[in-house]
Length: 212
Image 1: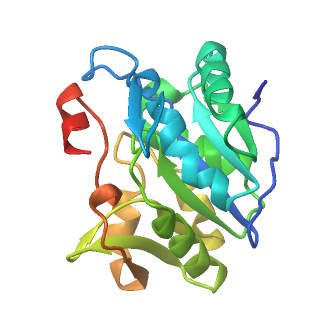
Image 2 (image 1 turned 120 degrees about the vertical axis):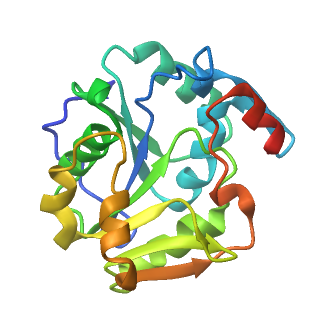
């Protein structure tokens, strides 16, 4: 079932809420990339199911922001993961998803507004390692204002925000997400060193699959 954005879904893992954004339109890919079959770790699953794999290992439940009318997508991902993963996916329909990534992010924050912090990931990044997710989560739990993984000096995903960024995150607009906040407050970012290029590997076009 897809929850209304007004529901307070709470948080987990030390008060940190996990939010994965899956409300894009896949225009550059040419079809629904999040349902595209992909083989990783010896298992073939829809791309978004791979993206959620390690999130479900780390968190008791994960909020996934989708477009309105995404019931078929939600069912497909749940079916793909049901036999191999525990944990609960809470689907959040964002009525304003067409306005850009910032609207989806704000929707996820609003649905988990009482959390002590938020770990934000993307459903089109199927190769993000568990160490990146758990490392950023641990940094937030330890009091970091901002946290993100990096490799060779380049910042990757997922990114974490402490609760005092709530109002600014809710006010974001456009398609750049929270990049502006991370750049403005880069001195506050706790850097989690990860020797894995999966923290950069988002899938925009079919050719990006070859880079995995």
